[in-house]
Length: 438
Image 1 (cartoon, rainbow, N blue to C red):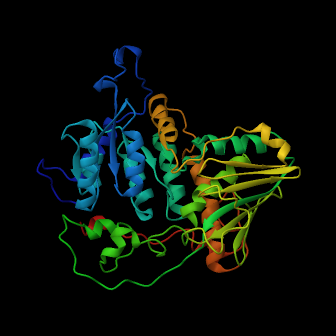
Image 2 (image 1 turned 90 degrees about the vertical axis):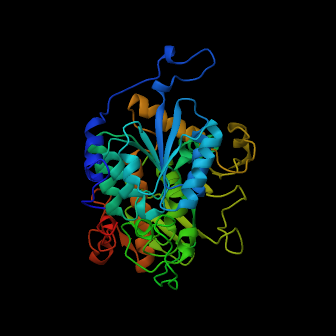
Image 3 (image 1 turned 45 degrees about the vertical axis):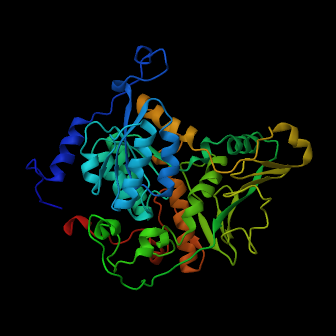
């Protein structure tokens, strides 16, 4: 909608510019006096939250965020009427009112001065552009993963948050989950001996470049197809895309599906190695996995997993739920997954770890709490933009090696291959400007 005037006589770009100027990154806290005897937080002390993209993942996150007394969801933006209206019903029913606003165009949400932070849970193609727009508009951002469709977009995202001073939290929430924390603590304690091998699971890679058959385009207010596509190349509308069938298509997906879990599981490998400022230096695709070798000599294997668990589950899995990881040292190993359990070898180490109750569904409340606490105190969240950059770059590099079908050398400082120009051509992609057609 570049250049189009609103009923206030200003373009959306002008609204964003004003919003960015008005927002100042300063510490703020909920004072004791702001909390009443009932434990309720005064409206003036609440964090105003907006949601950009309200599908199943956002709904899962939002259900946890609504329970936080110092957070108030004020608005939802989604290009699909069905989804934004469902999101409004969820919020209004929780608060017992009709106050949640809905927008087709995220820029209208970002222009609101009463929104301090946004949850971004669109498809992969919009994550980084929306997060960058939000930071420029003066908002803090909790962004679902994969946070960028390419290494270059992840770099731009990180640079934007470094420059603006806004708070960024990637939705790689397992760093805030107790059983994963315990596994990392045990591996770092030395009781497993020196770590030499890490096992992480990813979906079996998939690369599709075909188009689904064209279908009649819905009314723009029902599905804004142009904004749904966003920076991705244009293609004809098909309802399967907007219902979640976009996964696996190169134009929409991050790294041939590898980042869908790899953004989590390779991040857990980065974490246990205290390698948040680096990446592996070599990636080697194999028949059923990708070997990611660090300069230290440690190897992390991204092992392919069919969906659901089936005939080609990685051999290391001991049925601990989705996104399992195993850390192997010279004297033992520990494995954990989303169901909360821990398996430790040798058995004498079992007394070293608590026995967590098996669960269904990963609790995101602590990760959200960490983000909103950092919105107040301006400290870096546990999965901040710097952490995101290197774990995502590593997963993207693994995907590039798989796409090319050969070993890839990688420079952790430049986040590029030092000697494979064809690999570096996949570090970025051409981007369409959706606002030209809005």
